[in-house]
Length: 547
Ligand code: U2F
Image (cartoon, rainbow, N blue to C red; front, side):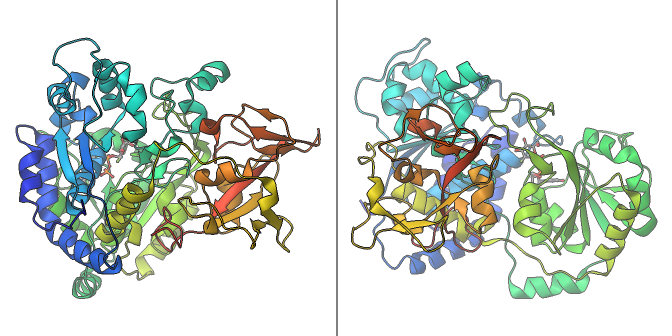
């Protein structure tokens, strides 16, 4: 069946259910953004020009909100706890509904069992018939629950699963045997999925798929009125939980206060938390729409280093604030920071919000060394005299998210076996010696992203393909590894650096285990062979010919 865009969200709102603060938060968000989704759906409908879209049967099982996983999030919704995940799930549900798919939503193991048609009760009871869904969106908690309650059949059906995974999972952590043998084993990884089945909140490593969320988009009238009403000496601090303010004790909050009126939205019960200085105007935790109003007036949104990689800075920038954040030197990662410890990635985080730094940057984002008071001081002064327009990258608008999720649903296929390996002779060297292109006398095999997007590069020693592609203005595309990992003559091995060649040994190595194709991998002794691709402006998940 063909999927038709939906603009009425009432069925979705009924499906989300009631009885928990997390669900109420998500429903308020869905209602508040309803008009934006409708406009976006209409625009995308026109853009896709009647392209056929299969209607899929989709199950969304939100594992972290189930009682069975302990649901530590719901009780903290009104108390300054994490909301990023709730923002993202609300937006995923809305996107799937608006795209017109046949959606079932489960927030408990019982509902999960009901939808999957496995008998209720404890222990693993394999699902015997076919899977009643084309796609299942869940998270790591949900995956664990499915393993417990679907038993062996999970293996059979796992190509249909998509895991919403905020910070991402790198291939070396995902491959069970490799992770166990080489010290990459964590509490979360080792599911042996295709790494693109993990879907992240920001475009971290391109080994995973970038799912994202949305932020409110302003029309021209709103943009103009915001710019007229900005208070140039008003700052809002990023941190709804008192503990996040401890980081601000270093003295820069005082420097900030010399120039600006400082506002906060810190949760409190009866009195001001001791971490929040008396000169701060604390509004308490605000409902999302009231936070937006505050951000519309403020000139500066300032982070102290935590939370990492949340939605709020995008909202601030979309409302015309400049986001000021600390640089991390050395970078934070699972190797040196408690928060990331045990997360299935060794990604190095160079500032509180790397997306804001790399993809948005000046004048909207300033990333400085907060320990250097001179640098900090001059950043504040610069911010006060800089005029910026509200800005939201397309990939974080409702239309951008619909476009991306549409493309994934129609094109990503982890169930059909990959076509046979390509033969090296299909490639020809392009005049630029490090780039290879497709020979013009052969027609490229069907693939998504299409092969027309492939640009082959060789990394520097020690450089990952993420960086190598980025520095050439491209993005690493793990789906293209299979096309470049193909010199029949070379011995193949299992190692997440391959394909690559060793500079010292003057040897090439190919990859024998497709699950270990990794954009993120790097090693000092190797120059890697990197499959890069082009990408759309402000929609990094999609190549030019990807729609
Ligand atoms: C991130 O989670 P957080 O929830 O801490 O992320 P934030 O950027 O603070 O914002 C989440 C939402 O909270 C809203 C705001 C954002 O959409 O509009 N909000 C609000 O409604 N009222 C207020 O007074 C203040 C904010 C990240 F998303 C998670 O993945 C991480 O686990 C977490 C820890 O790093 O950080």
